[in-house]
Length: 256
Image (cartoon, rainbow, N blue to C red; front, side):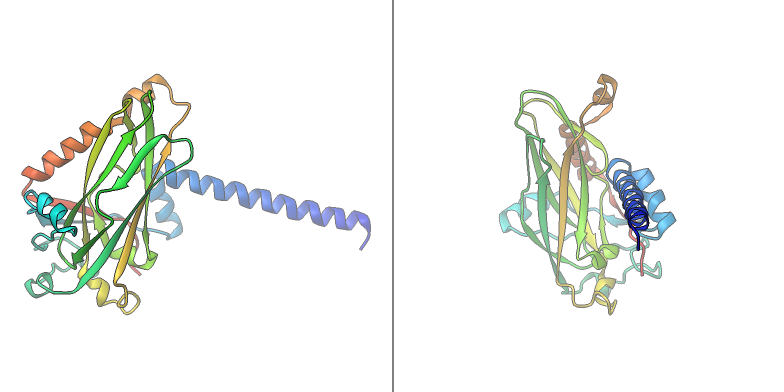
């Protein structure tokens, strides 16, 4: 092969790598910065699926203090409706009172350049399958300026994510904290008991839910103003959970 051919080959490979890198960067941007585009991407590629929702009876209002004292999540009554099961059937009473448990671990991270303190109030809870559990995350702005950040989450092992439901909370939206301001963020999660009836996930006994906050820079004054107030929004969510008869949870991972 002559020098010219080698040069053309190297150029072709370089262009291919550049195109692939750009495509990957665009996909990551969609995932991180827009829940709507993220779901469109999932629908187009098959990575995820249509959002599935379930509504479960709410008995978490009096569970928070007990949860903290016991050091593990306090399960509340099981769902009596919704589409938590793969076939759309409602969980039965027998399923709801099952002793089958999964340990759920919580992880919290802040990306470089974000002067926030962020952590789960509990590192692990024992969740009964088919019953919601309420936990809390904590965030504080340690800087002297208002900062806007956005969180993304991940469930591992990924194959268990299709059975992991949670409330719509502080993820995939611009959130802001004033200087020195802190927020206690409620989170209700639910693991479908079908997870241990699926041969692919039957052995799963522990799941990790991880959140990472990224600072949102170069925002206009209007964009900063429009960002959700993390403390006020979290307080509102807590109030809603305390008075709602049911809790709505969702999952947008495609069932295999």
